[in-house]
Length: 230
Image (cartoon, rainbow, N blue to C red):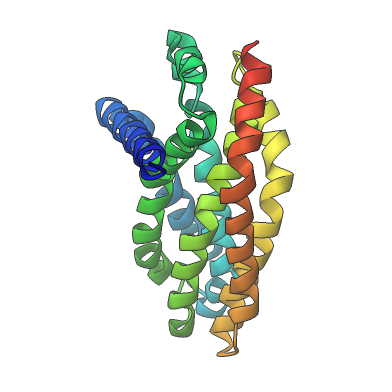
């Protein structure tokens, strides 16, 4: 008998993710804009700084992660805004299913749409920055663990500013300070790997941030949505 609620929750989670992916497919511009922004930012650095290999290799981890952070930030406003405008967000909050599951599904879909493509694109762009060969695995791991953290933290800010018509600036001010730990440890991991040194410690901290985000952030997002929509 205990398995039925678990199956029900999983079904709700799956339906929310499918719904978000379907809506993203219908609004391709919202999906492509963060990805194109990431590509443009990373590719402009070699053009602006010059072809100096050592300089580009030194700044590569920071450039890639700052671009990923800003690309994620660019896409945060649409997590709840369209659902709030058409009234579907209120219906979700009034549904008998736990808000935690609904929020988890929306954030997971946001990461699949925004974060996952960056992981696949980053190695190609890292070549133009002459990233050290030893650092590619570390870069992929930090993006795999770090970008979901950005989505969860950013969703808290998006939930708090969902009622604001032009809440982009306030959203940025709210979440950017919270993004800094991920940025610091991610770039430190890549730099350590480039020096051919063990980087498991920094990676473990990012993994711990991810576990904390998955565990706690949906509750914070749910509370923020209830406050913002009342």
